[in-house]
Image (tube, rainbow, N blue to C red):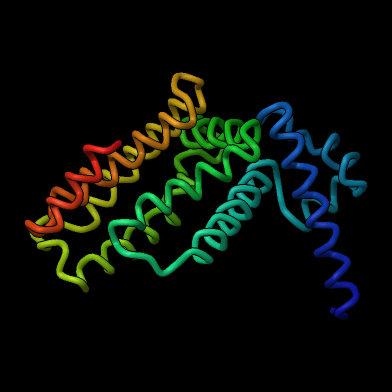
Length: 213
């Protein structure tokens, strides 16, 4: 395949993803109709299937692209002290959401739909693998500095941390809490989980941070 053809295919793929982003933000998951998307992206429906896939694959591509953007933005601000990392992770996410709330709300609701609806490609948590990897990086950094005791299984603690953050995200997506409340609840969850296995001095620092939230 020539470089020119590859470049043109990638340009069409980017147009498809950009148009899908707009459709999702405006109408939610049900709005990702491939005919409407093809018209908006100025491609054919078979081109969408060839370059991205079906409706679920299209949504997965949107999620992957946005998590890639999140990681790029986060890593530009690293390294930072372990105690600062949870706040940096959450503030980076909240800043991105604030720039495009309709899209992120629709995206989260679509993720819930795909996890819970049989036959729609459900039972996949599209966000969890990336969140687990970032959580493990946080824990590895804390362990290497002797800030956690290692008495509680790392992956169990990370799962609790992610579940808390996703619950806060869900409440925000369903408009039960504000974005600022989501930030606060997510950060509380991070700090409480860290405190559960923290060394004594580090635990005192975490408690001081919690008292200021």
